[in-house]
Image (tube, rainbow, N blue to C red):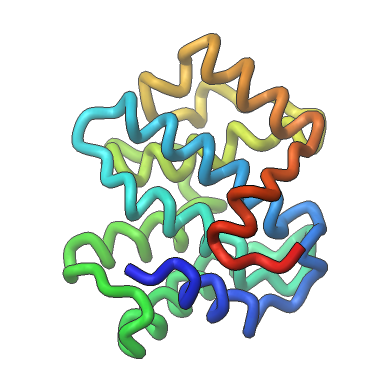
Length: 172
């Protein structure tokens, strides 16, 4: 899959400041968190987790109370699939759209991939000074103290992974 093409599609529609609370640096920290969780979670789909990280907040209208952004992100995923930008088979596409649509509304998921997606996003709450609530964590991997420590530091210090951004085609 051409991640640069996906990133260009996201950039073409993103309405907010790319460096804002829900922008590119958040997406890349969620990606890092998600890939670490997927590596430690049997049956998790790394590619879907990575796509979720880049897409889940891509359709926000504001940084605050936009409860419909997940549903819009799921619709965006479907559109990118119809255009051939995202090339996942139907079952994997359904998992991605469900993760995007549910990430703000659902508390947990038993699906290993969706659980990694939700947990990866919640592990970046430290950017707001908040620790994730264990009641809303889905994966066993999210309880790993070292994984949590690293995720906390990335979010709290708002780490900007310029190498990852360049590699995916995000402008700096």
